[in-house]
Length: 353
Image (cartoon, helix red, strand yellow):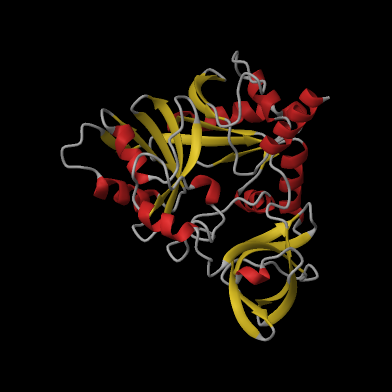
């Protein structure tokens, strides 16, 4: 439902920009001879090129989604892995369990050493540019690019990525610098009315962009095709990986369920949160995974797992919230384009003009 404080954070991030502290992310350095071969065997996606970033998933032997990683390639055999704040030890244990005893590479947990600030919104580039001599324009700092650079006098590792789906950077740095760096960013953004945004605003924005969350949309009960992660699963890549045989078998099968996005008509009374029951023809047919309020759609929204035949656009179901069944409709996933997609489309249109 609408909330004046949350509304202000979401709207300001979309219209001007905002900054948030995401230091609790789990952060690991993987480096040394053999690191590339090992990491490729752990994830279903291909690995990024040097100074590039991608989203990759670790799977179980049964082809279920064990974890999601943001992988930054810092060198030939040097990687920086980022995971959710609640997944740090969960993911670290999985990686350590599969490391060979005679490994020539190391895996170091840097979670407590590294701070992370995220800057997002239309003026994020302006704010970053005021604090560095590096060129920040799109043609010089592309989406999913990473760069070690100076920002406000601090050594940082800046990555052009944002879980909000807006223009943005994650700024990884020595944790002792977080407070001063945060103040410098706010000062640089003052003329653009840059403010703070938090996890609830991030959740609203990422839902609108169709971004999945581990532990909600992605979990050990679902395979990546049910979760709509097809673009990230390279089942025929040259390096074999954990779960490869399983996803090859699953890929062409009819899935038992599919993830869908719903608008829920609650009359602004409350929002879905996750794990709520979904009804159709007085039968339980699925469950929500996460939800919130979309300030662009002006509606409660949620992700939900439904039988494939109920995931067509316009399909109607009911979501049960606090014992009341509210009507819900399947809508586009994603509901709105990310900044990266908007920019790519605009450049393509300009080139064709």
